[in-house]
Image 1 (spheres, one colour):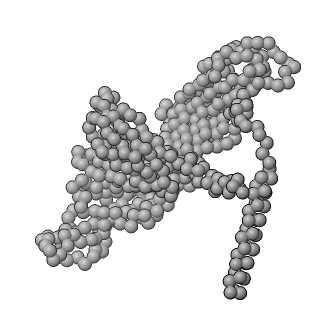
Image 2 (cartoon, rainbow, N blue to C red; image 1 turned 45 degrees about the vertical axis):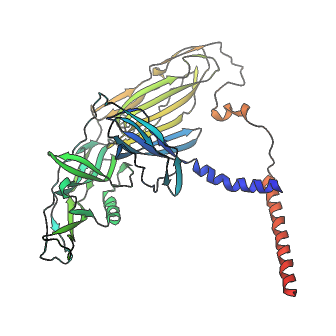
Image 3 (cartoon, one colour; image 1 turned 90 degrees about the vertical axis):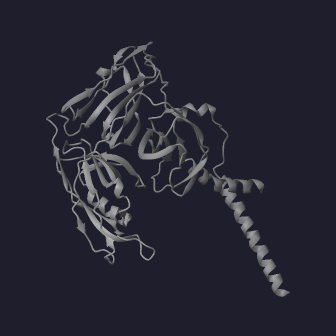
Length: 483
């Protein structure tokens, strides 16, 4: 009976344990120089980020921007996606700082961290590239009705504007460009403006920004935090309301309509006293001008409609450069760079009598940061040599893409050579191909047989217990009525 209860207990506990393994907290590296960020990240496995509590404060650090990265791993037909959202922390001084244990609530689940000690060293010599400043678009002033305008309140001029920023005005089909919606507010006017009904307004704005003919890589963020920037020599607070990288899939122009944002604007009391408020609420609407991005056709090429577009490089690796006949090896073909990684397909090796290539395992790592989408896509092939010899992999496979910077097609080719030794065995019935991690752990796993009817037995005993409890309850009920 004890075995039955323990089994039921662990069955109830198992889903919670598996869920806890899907969300975790990743702490940044220490030590770090004074001019670099420390990061705290939350990682989610095979699930979307719906909500999360604010990241903790760290004494001696100031919260800065956020960014996210997505890692996709395909192994043996199974796909795993890992989403990580990072919070940047800017160190304020050199020294040793303590990150106390903390917890965060992510998608309704509480995740714990034990904290750590962070060491900040002197400033590194490398310089950090500056941020792009969007073009300024003056806000069309359109005051709306205010609440009980009274003579003792005056309306001050504000220095604020809404702008839709794009880093390119013309792109090729498949070429990515950044789109960001910013609200700029002069530092000295912080007390004059505030957001109004932001959730409903941003939902309507996002619908207007959606494009039917693009692939979108959106930057996920749930908090609108201001950034300190300099525009034309003046300090501003910049609020990032939306950011994505878009990849057009056909020649239709990308058109963004005029966008508007309604803000609370306060009037200031001319002679504040105890009998009246210092501020009075009103409203003001800011507008971002419409934009159009022209889309160009790629230059003539037999594979013009199939090649990916971006700036890429190749990294390759063989598990062994010297192999034996009928002994499998692994070959890694990794494409790295900036572009639409989701559109990258694996190169198809040409048929070679002495080598067998098997379909690759795929792994995709995507980082969205500072308005750019970068990362890598890896293809790991299992190669089975059948005949001895030297095989130049560059003659067996290649990968073509279009570089929008040079406006030319380019080809990535392997440079490695595989040397195979041994004697061809035409009568071999069992080939020692590496079939993956599942088969490599067979020898270490328990081979005890488990009954397929074990759950049926647990269900049967549970039903018996319920019947006994029902009979006892009925007996007690009837006995009390007789008394």
